[in-house]
Length: 95
Image 1 (spheres, rainbow, N blue to C red):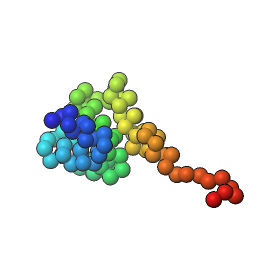
Image 2 (cartoon, rainbow, N blue to C red):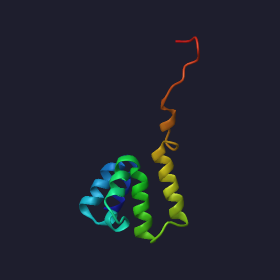
Image 3 (cartoon, rainbow, N blue to C red):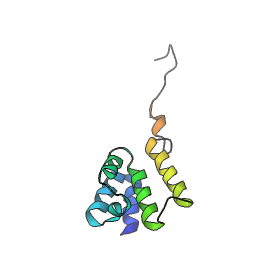
Image 4 (tube, rainbow, N blue to C red):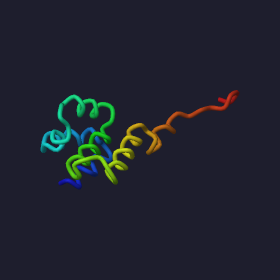
């Protein structure tokens, strides 16, 4: 089951967060309040899942888990995955 949720998280991280919240306390153990996971759900879902993994699996954000959170944040910002290349720029004078 965890592998299935991990695959879902790569394609639809918001759906994965909903599944994790419904079927476990994984997010609740990582965060003290409900505000930060809700904001993470809206704006940075991969980073929210990566932070929950780091806290639950290791107990802190260091080593490979720090790299995982940085990679998730970059993916959320669109740096990884081609999200920034979606806008086409036309040359002046050409249609």
